[in-house]
Amino acid sequence: MDTIDKLRESIVNFQIKEVPELTKKALEEGKDALEILNEALIKAMEIVGEKFERQEYFLPELLAAAQSMYAALDILKPLLSKSGKVEKIGKVVLGTVKGDLHDIGKNIVKMMFEGANFEVIDLGRDVPAEKFVEAVEKEHPQFVGMSALLTTTMLQMKEVIEKLNEKGLKDKVKVMVGGAPVTEEYAKEIGADIYASNASEAVRIAKEIMK
Ligand code: B1M
Picture 1 (cartoon, rainbow, N blue to C red):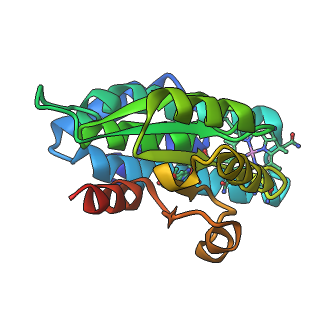
Picture 2 (cartoon, protein in one colour):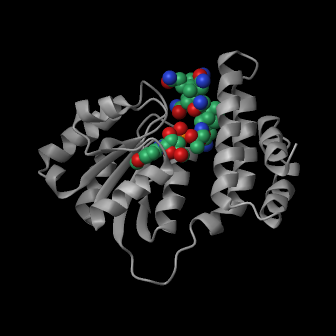
């Protein structure tokens, strides 16, 4: 078992005390921060989700695993969002939609955007449609990004787009959507401009648009 495997296991088993040490060890061994994120942290949360579905894990375990993941993410954050002093290449308003408390994916998207030199206005989680619209009005971003992890809350994305339309703002900003239940098809159906299945893809597409 290499260090990445051990780190993944320690997140799945919420051994939060071991997590910082293993994360630092993986970095010392020369593992790339992005590789650690994808192979240990994100994979661990997939396994945790499967255990929840099989009713091996319940809410407290989900939460403990999420806390363990954050213990690793805190160490990786400066490496993932390291941005030079060069001018920002664009602005993104980002949040998890109303009714949804899942913010790990949104926070990873934020870090990756910051790492690519975008300015990110983070609205947090459980963000009502009006707040997204207000932020677009005030901040004039090139992108508004919404994350949803529940099949029930992804419907909120449509509401935000409708409200942007009502205010005549829809053509002034590119709407980006993502999160586990969201699909390219759904994005098209609700009139979103961009669908991204993961954080790296989200940033790659945004950078292409800014060119
Ligand atoms: Co919950 N949860 N959860 N949960 N949870 C899921 C999502 C679930 C799939 C688990 C399962 O049943 N297998 C299920 C949803 C079922 C459904 O709707 N289809 C579920 C449920 C049911 C619930 C509750 C309803 C449980 C209950 O109370 N009975 C409850 C809801 C609370 C609420 O939101 N109102 C709940 C609560 C929680 C916790 C609070 C305990 C915790 C969240 C802690 C936190 O986020 N701070 C939690 C967790 C941890 C999970 C799982 C296990 C892991 C989610 C995660 O962080 N994944 C999850 C299982 C799963 O997803 N398989 C589950 C890692 C993260 C990096 O991935 O967020 O997908 P993800 O982000 C990716 C991409 O999707 C993409 O990039 C990211 C990185 O590459 N991406 C974007 C995300 N947003 C993007 C935006 C973009 C572009 C790309 O553009 C803007």
